[in-house]
Length: 364
Image (cartoon, rainbow, N blue to C red; front, top):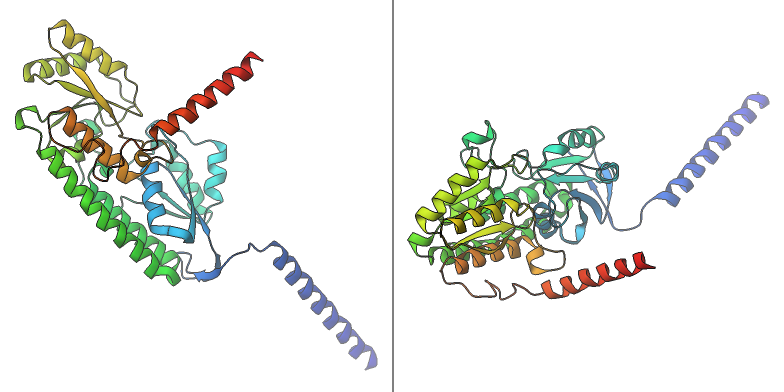
């Protein structure tokens, strides 16, 4: 009997020691910060530490996610300035970054065609993965014949559509982190109020372009939703995806259109090579037509980080203002908020300085 009691006491001590050891290990490795609980998309509760991690793809998605998440999450984008998401191939580090996230947002509609299997991979690991365009009604989506039954993914070109995507993000984060639902909803509502002003401004300045001059010529077909929303016909050299190559017939047909309609300005894009546009201008010149480059538009990528054009709001403000002014319409030089161009000079100086340092290092 004494032997049995001593054995029980020894076992109890062993269990107690093991529990204390486990608690000590967990407290040493737990991340610091405010904590809450979340549903993790499946009904089970787990501890949530702030800021939690969100990983996004293209900058247009990154920016609106930041607007909604606020200080509750750290938002990291994979696809940077001037990078074409159609052609983007994720690196091994990108996969590691995706797996380290609690939530992933991407645009969808095959924009990030090279990343589909990676989203499936991280979803199977328990990461919450959302396409911000999945809430859009299919009746709204463009489905050009040349895109072989797929929808046009460039929905951010219509500010109303991207405002709806913002609302979807708020809903997704509210489900993931219900304790902060009111914060996400308030952030989304405040941002959507600003987007409404941007949409109204874009309609106004594009409408100021004389009807006979209101045609937009771009490098690739990324402005279909912009065309429909702001009533400006669009023609382009390449199709919806920059993976497709423009043929001689495509260029000749566009040259015919420009000459016949006396188009004075066409536009290059920050994430698309300019060779095709230059070829169009050269052929127009040979036929006696005076055509200039109206400026550089942001299509599949935004401007430099840290600049006004490096935000979604600034991107659309830049595009609408530049198009209107180049085609003979009326728009303030600095755009809706008087911010266009702010930060660009500083960014160029930083880039040039970095280049000079790099050249100097190579000379040494």
